[in-house]
Length: 83
Image 1 (cartoon, one colour):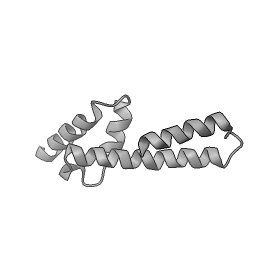
Image 2 (cartoon, helix red, strand yellow; image 1 turned 90 degrees about the vertical axis):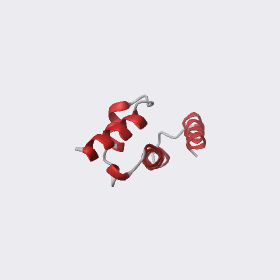
Image 3 (cartoon, rainbow, N blue to C red; image 1 turned 135 degrees about the vertical axis):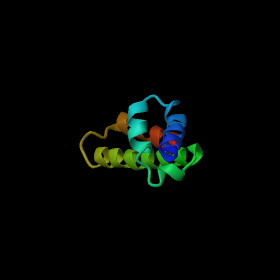
Image 4 (cartoon, rainbow, N blue to C red; image 1 turned 120 degrees about the vertical axis):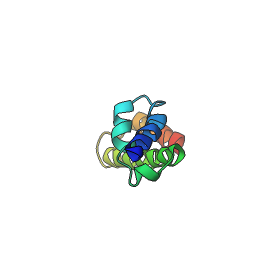
């Protein structure tokens, strides 16, 4: 029970500041060894997952017909902010 409590406290600390709390709880809460990670480590994990998901979106747009100049600029700005 102590581990479960520490997981929820750490995950809550990370996810409470996000716009999409439920998705955060789902993603960050499933981190490998979540019971041993502190909020900073969970945050780093969340950023890593965000970058992976963003890469998938970029690949989908860049390989399709949906990539016009405006979309390309917006995606470039998004990548710049994440990096």
